[in-house]
Amino acid sequence: MNPSPTAASPDLVACDRIMFEPPISSRIGLKEAPEAITNPARRGEIRALVVPGEK
Image (cartoon, rainbow, N blue to C red):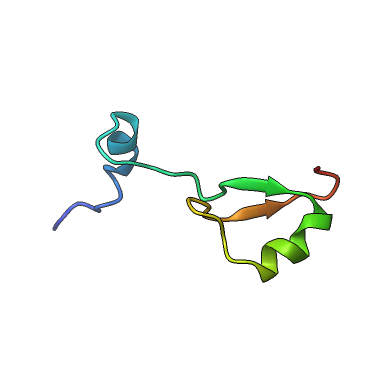
C-alpha cells in the first residue's frame, strides 16, 4: 500500500521544499466589498477576506 501523499506535506512545507502561499492575500472592509467583487483581482491577489470594521 502506498503511503498517503499528504502525509509528507507538513514536512515539505517546513523545510521549504515546496512553495506555500496563504489562501488569503488581503483583508478589505465591508465598504470595499462591492468594488472587489465587480473588479478583477489585482496581480498576485488570490483571495480577499472581507472583515467588517476593517479599513
